[in-house]
Length: 144
Image 1 (spheres, rainbow, N blue to C red):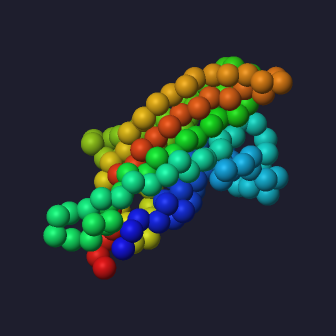
Image 2: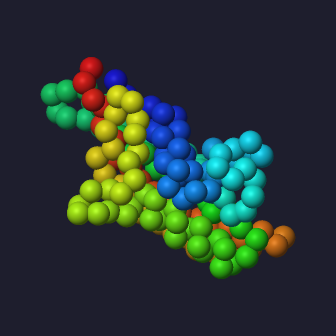
Image 3: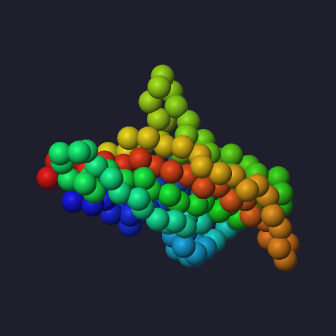
């Protein structure tokens, strides 16, 4: 069974909101009812960027996947947006005793690895500051 990019994205979105304490939209700014902070800046926006599948030689050829996504932090000052980007990086990559500090739980899958693919840093347009980060998750299916 191929890995569901949507399911992984929803799990990442949930982890980001819980771990950063800030709302995270899925492809768009969060709504006023988004938890925990609604549309109050700073917040994050998750953009799925695609899934590349592979698998073990004698198993399901699409059972493993490399899931690429972007998190754009949005704020009203440069300091605030960098603070938010730091919180996102910590939420996704922080470890304690070799174990990731924040679980990304996806039913039927296991997240095997995480990495920061690229950071584009701060940009500003119309008084709105953004900070772009791209991440890769390595995901495998559990059972059949």
